[in-house]
Length: 296
Ligand SMILES: NC(=O)C1=CN([C@@H]2O[C@H](COP(=O)(O)OP(=O)(O)OC[C@H]3O[C@@H](n4cnc5c(N)ncnc54)[C@H](O)[C@@H]3O)[C@@H](O)[C@H]2O)C=CC1
Ligand SMILES: CC(C)(CO)C(=O)C(=O)O
Image (cartoon, rainbow, N blue to C red):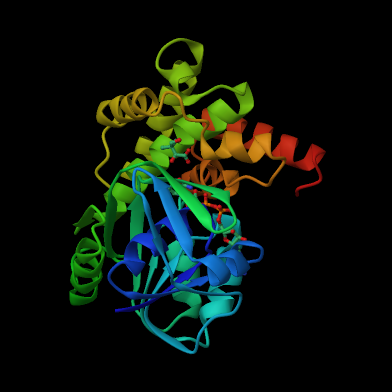
């Protein structure tokens, strides 16, 4: 399979590196990482240890069987615009946050797949990505249900040794992942704590309350997501990733824009006036930090 990974940063380089063991992969990213990969290949370390040599460029090739989109959620419109002239068989988003697939589908003619990814990745240096945790990719048609395209992409990921589930309930999975990110990311970013600080105590109460709001909004959207399993999921992820600094805390650490608009902000927008005070507060406080740093 000929794959273009659009957004070759941490996650894109890990997934692209794993896929490159079995497929023809082109990483689309930015220098100095792209130049380093061109010159010396891509080293994947951490839970894996290998070096591979995908193509690497700063511009999109003319065609590919599959585009895997791994930019931050706020860059998805730009990614969609950059891919519009690429002759694609299909497109898969592995991003966090909600709305990415709709943004891609609005501009691309190919089938768009939705996905969640619980692998952990960190770009250690140009040309070198570390896998900080082995997880799972779940993917399916963005419309829900099943499709031949989703099956084929699932086989391609599985053939590359990526733990993959082809899911006919991708909407539920996206909302469940949203509840986890809405509970953990902003809470840890604002408190400047690692995920484990939410396992119990005041931070955990905020994370649980945020997740309950997400579950309610999901149900209002017709997605079967119950409160307590979601709250338990948030607590178990916080415990399993206790030493992690969440991606939003890492963004705050580096003074970078966060994905709050696609996470807690999405919950507020989807609630359409329904009371979601915890997500509304988390969104406002993270946006206040971004504004103070001139990021919005
Ligand atoms: N890093 C991780 O462990 C995980 C990340 N995610 C999600 O995956 C997405 C990506 O996250 P990361 O890889 O951590 O972010 P990142 O910032 O490391 O990677 C994104 C990359 O896209 C590149 N990019 C953006 N626009 C571009 C353009 N127009 N042309 C070329 N390159 C462009 C950026 O330069 C950057 O290198 C986010 O939604 C994140 O929440 C999900 C699961 C795990
Ligand atoms: C699951 C969690 C919260 C792990 O840190 C994550 O996905 C993130 O940090 O964005």
